[in-house]
Length: 337
Image (cartoon, rainbow, N blue to C red; front, side, top):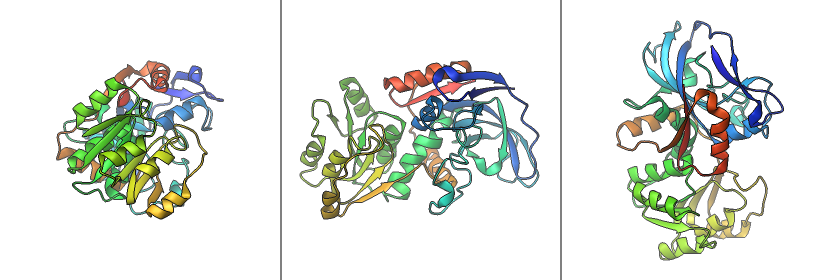
């Protein structure tokens, strides 16, 4: 079968299409899945570029969706022909995070081989059912970005109707968060540096938008828009370059979900403001398999679909990563085969 692997020390020019051994028939508790699509995340880009080290010839991509071809003994959740989507932390079934998810040792496309292959055989808990009626590339978009937004707002953030949330930028997590917030009847304030993208965010349901290039003190603008109250939830994907504004924008007793580090890995944290506002600042990495099951159930009860910016072919993965890195995308970048 064909697979997309990464030669060390990494770099987009070291992604290669290889003939890999065929996926074996499933053993007890396993399923065999023909993968049809994947999607790209910032984590995948870090692996591909060599910023996150992995083994030589690692099969790439955390997110994959496809169809069950064979079911091993003891598997009752899936049947041949089911549409399924991978789980980012297959070992984290439910409950709070523990030491097993403090790194990427068992994450597809990083610590273990990923989904960029024609067929994979994995334990059944490495997948969940995909949303009914969705295309494979739509389903592949939810594993990392969508589940992260769901956990941040719903599972951990306890989102309520009427809450105000702030999303930063137009990546997959931020757009999924916007859509989830609207499912729950929340108010959304979205930021971007592009007027064109801000218009698209409004079309998706954002109630107010802020151009952070024209208004670098966007935290103060959030306070203005909320009559000094601030936002109950901040989806913080920037990291050290944006955290100060997020702390300014958040309401007393609010919740900042630290999800991304697009502006770097270290920086200053306004600890006094966090303390006086009694804010909960929570770092999080994706979510459990149960979070994904819950998210899929919610998606099936709503009409929202993921925003797929652009779709690349199987052998165009390096080009897809280059496009992702450019920051030109709005929503998710997909790969199909």
